[in-house]
Image 1 (cartoon, rainbow, N blue to C red):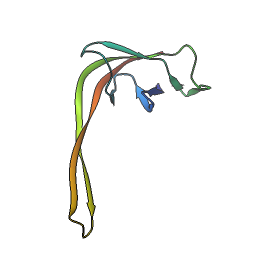
Image 2: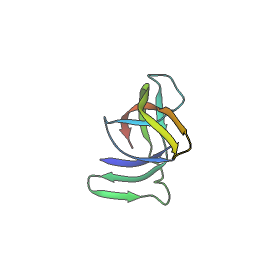
Image 3: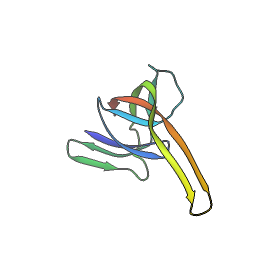
Image 4: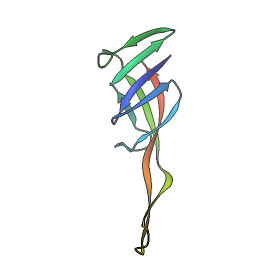
Length: 102
């Protein structure tokens, strides 16, 4: 059994007891969260596709921690002009454990 869920504008394929890294969400570690934008639900081979969402289905989970992703380097340069700029960025994520689909 799995579902495709829209979380903060991004789509995730989730199953029970799976960990996912979502864009940073509000809430403390240990808090429970619920996602109601379920786009597709596969239950033992029978697929329910929403238009745009499946009615009456929610995915619940628990926030485990807030983490930072790997560093992304942004480097800009213009040839023969003496211009070079190097910046870095670490995106913030929330680690969520999926507890129930239904």
